[in-house]
Length: 365
Ligand SMILES: NC(=O)c1ccc[n+]([C@@H]2O[C@H](COP(=O)([O-])OP(=O)(O)OC[C@H]3O[C@@H](n4cnc5c(N)ncnc54)[C@H](O)[C@@H]3O)[C@@H](O)[C@H]2O)c1
Ligand SMILES: [Zn+2]
Image 1 (cartoon, rainbow, N blue to C red):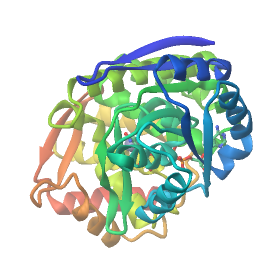
Image 2: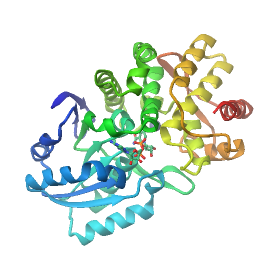
Image 3: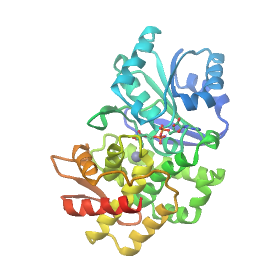
Image 4: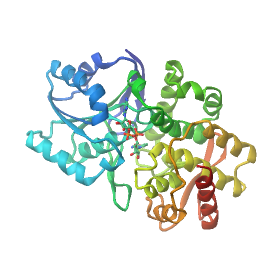
């Protein structure tokens, strides 16, 4: 059942995010309604495949789609050019042409990689996002940022490429391990801090319900976060302005992921720790009151982190930061809160303050 439809009003081709429970029976008809042609490449990872692939493929075949299933190992390291090449080969061998559609069934890794495939295969084919993690449902499946990583940096090769629609079925969250729920909370807390103080306050009261995947609480989170992401993307699709606020916690977060070789620290975990470090920078710069800083850190500390950062070296984190896309002409650029619910872009932060903030999170984990 579809319980909510959120519109993403990007200029060229507005699209919908459908949110609900037990929605599979409606997917085929919706794809037909949205003009999806017969050839569909379903890209997923082995874990998601074992849980959800068979019924999905059976359903699509029932609606007359010709499916090619591409199952890859799970993990951030699959977001690569090497993996993309293999996927292109399968699609070419299958005879898929310009009218093909890529269906991304999985978390943010599958969504970003499949989006990159869709954006580039035959100069662009249709894309349907079927996000299955909390993080992908509240964030990565919406907004059209698609990319793969390069050994020298995350998301270095990619495009802005919007999906035909996003299919957010909350019933798949029941199989998600706690560690992945905490990752989703990274982006969820971020939305509260950057633009929505009442939502932050709601999280202070309800974070335990979200951790327990309470249906009503998750529905509220989905609606709020998808709404914020849709609004910000509609206003600034290509990140020339307001969209940059979504990077709070990500300057240090991405660097933590890279320093851990994309194995030790997951994206959402990097964002949680990155928000602690960046809030500390904001407080030290005199932008953020101690009270607001303490509220942000206290909420994040209630989310149980499963990664270990003690083996990371500050030097590696700083090096990773200097290669990040968010470095503009050599200047490190931070999105920092000046209160709960509002952020500002700050350049030229003193490197010793950055180092000190990183050391603090490495000590505490
Ligand atoms: N494009 C964007 O705007 C954007 C925004 C935020 C994050 N991202 C990207 O998203 C990626 C992280 O995404 P993620 O956190 O979803 O990680 P992920 O895609 O690696 O998924 C996490 C794990 O959960 C498993 N899984 C997925 N759905 C499941 C389910 N329903 N039940 C059980 N297990 C399930 C997967 O097999 C995987 O092992 C990063 O690469 C990050 O850069 C992109
Ligand atoms: Zn993110």
